[in-house]
Image (cartoon, rainbow, N blue to C red; front, side, top):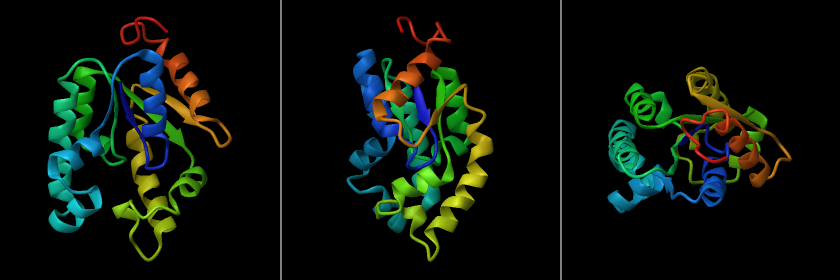
Length: 173
């Protein structure tokens, strides 16, 4: 299962909780990219640019999908690339963590690890990304609403309920 959604939607936290509940590994594509590059995502963006990063991201996602069953968390922009959507559909199922803009802003505004938000108007940039990306996220196989006030465990439980509707993916809820 591949978690997709905006930065701050909870992909990493919910992914870890799902991994623990389902007894499968948790894999983070951004962490795998950083490990392979021996650099942070922000450093890769600054040094090599976004197109270079997106190519490495696609390679890493393909490699993670080729492995044993796992919960994979992707970067916010990964699902925008058709090649990634096709790879995810071929090897697994995409689960969109759907969070509204205010919740996302509350979660990311104090972090300096988001290279796409290093702009004069980071909230405006986030809003622009949100408007562009949500129609693509809606293409995901499944979705779960990330609600303010819901704990990581509550969101993971909702994700399991949604996954239970797909017996081809989840053998035992």
